[in-house]
Length: 154
Image (cartoon, rainbow, N blue to C red):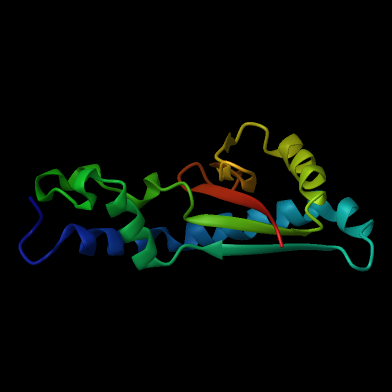
């Protein structure tokens, strides 16, 4: 059971701010690696084509809500405090690669799969098409914080 006055959410917020420097380090390194490995593609783009790499760090409340949604009944069990950790989320740090035209997605995906081949695929799709290619795994920056990269058409 949670300490009097301290909810599971409070504990998770505390954990978030303890993890934040490492989350930022993972996001920064992932963005740098992606930019580096996509440089040959970026340098070969036509003037109308786009390849934009943006890093992001999941906000505290968004992380807590994401962990809550993954629980049965979308709520935390006060009797199982030790079971919850934001480090279990796969996307505390991430990079989104925006690509235009859509055909460049395949080229970008191939280049990154050579580097991040061990990462787990988790594509976002409808019945008609894949909307985004998503992968998650651990980078060299941390074995505690999992990261995610997404490749999407703009």
